[in-house]
Length: 174
Image (cartoon, helix red, strand yellow):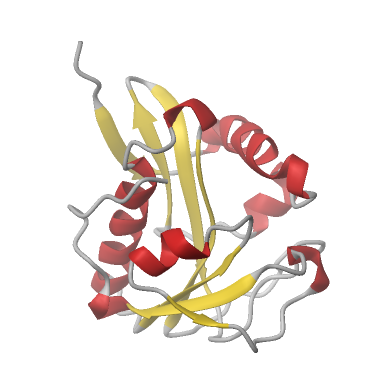
């Protein structure tokens, strides 16, 4: 049976599933933020869930944020930034569905959204040894960029030009 995959805007009913996926992905790394903090990083029109046969299989949260800065994982976001940089705060695929190209699908959808909405760059903080994944999607590491301590010693700030992102059809394993 073929799976039906759809990327759609995040809705109120999605938050419990998003928080559960986030906890599953980051608890072992000590990076789990929980639903309350995740909600403060959700900007209208730049946060999506991956719906696979009617269940939440993944999500991406992104918000306008000044370049070479990122949210502190221990504090809520109270300021709406008006920036030309879109910060990809979090992208998670459910553990049993990883390495099927779904992370690349979500990243591509966000890149298309960034271009359509006029962002010039997309940034992120790679954690958990994910720098190679993001590099394959066109991101460049900025190892000297200071990050809040909560991201961990191996975290790397990365950027890509919004117009330079590979096509959504390119789907590296995640």
